[in-house]
Image 1 (tube, rainbow, N blue to C red):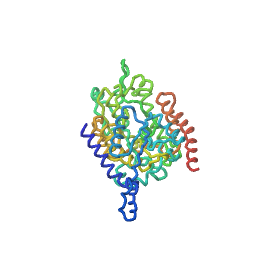
Image 2 (image 1 turned 45 degrees about the vertical axis):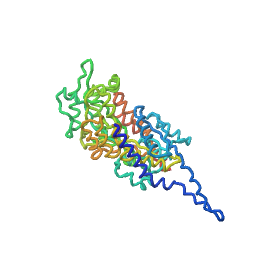
Image 3 (image 1 turned 60 degrees about the horizontal axis):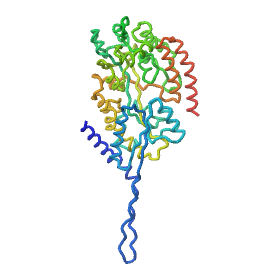
Image 4 (image 1 turned 60 degrees about the vertical axis):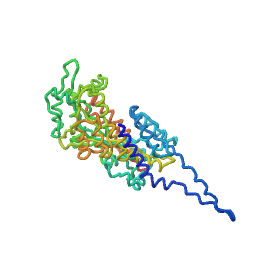
Length: 456
């Protein structure tokens, strides 16, 4: 652990010396000219240069309590290697953050740097909450933006210009309970699996006639969220939205077939718990060890490793009737309109989201799914990563797409509409046709209004 801290400290010092050199030179006050010599005397000593400006950078995060000390340690090391710069952190809960940031913006009290979930990147750029970083990226060769996945960068562009920058981006693949498979004598999932095979095995793993029920599948789908709708429907050739994000496309035969598939696993096969059945377990049916398979993201790994009373691993997401496809999504950081120190804010961002920064913050700790492959591979070597974590990278490189919506001002409202209907479907309170009709009737006017606002 000590050696790791020393190496990261060296990284921060290197970052200060190289990435910040040009900015520091540009900001340095000019040297004072020598004072004129009095008649017949020697020149007076030059006037003392003005003291360097002391800068306080403010940041707005959405970390859980357990991760905040690691963030504070990064900030301490950064300040140590950047004399004159102090970093002050404000932390919101994830849910509150999305509401607090627009409130800060209205009061012109935004921090210099702020956490930006991918679903908020587009509207916050439109509203002027974040400012472009394109020129900084272009002039900072050490930052190496090319090693960040293009799929993740695209989330944070507004009208072709980069605003926020991703720190993580990950796909959903298949997680499974190895103990349950071993007890049943069933081979683990592999790349040959289709969703039909998964459904067959889920039924074989299900035992609901005892005191403590067991299910083969978690019942997580249908789900129309940014990561969820991809694996829910795209394997059948269906999609939620057109590429321009102006039209809902859920009213299709392919979408109906896909949604009915997941509904039948819950309500016909009984091989997945209803939401109420899962909630009967304190930490849900999956973490309680009562489910054989569930969607898994790399950011789930710390929770799964800490709380699951069984050995878990991951496999490629099964293929649908048309293709293998899944959703991916992430989060980033942006510089805000209220910063008084944009150059210093970029220096911090450049270190924080560099290759070394991502490894230190989210790779070595096992906390997330870094948006650079080098960071992701560091996460794969962490204590919390499952044995076959490379399947996450395979998905990112081969069949994961960023889950829409993310280029509309209606993303949050549309998410509420689709999320409500998905919940009713999983609980059995509505049927596929009714849910699709409700989403189309409520969602399309919201998209239309957002499109008009963007154009106006």
